[in-house]
Image 1 (cartoon, helix red, strand yellow):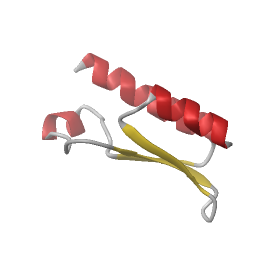
Image 2 (cartoon, rainbow, N blue to C red; image 1 turned 90 degrees about the vertical axis):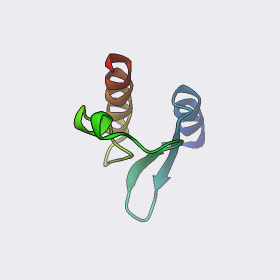
Image 3 (tube, rainbow, N blue to C red; image 1 turned 45 degrees about the vertical axis):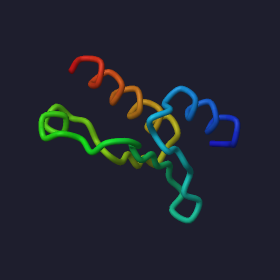
Image 4 (cartoon, helix red, strand yellow; image 1 turned 180 degrees about the vertical axis):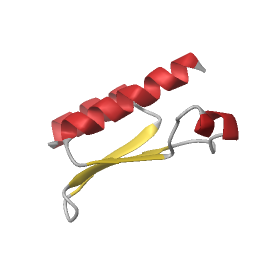
Length: 71
């Protein structure tokens, strides 16, 4: 993920702090704002996402958005 891809994702998912962890060669996002409720956690929302590939990372963020929309 280059800076342009990171900025695009950050704009698309403003409630997440998105970054690449070079030392671990992975992608990470941390949810911003309030803590998640027990219900939100039970429904599958996560406070942190960590994936090895950009494709998996982008899909995980999209999955989180879908869950949020269904709540």
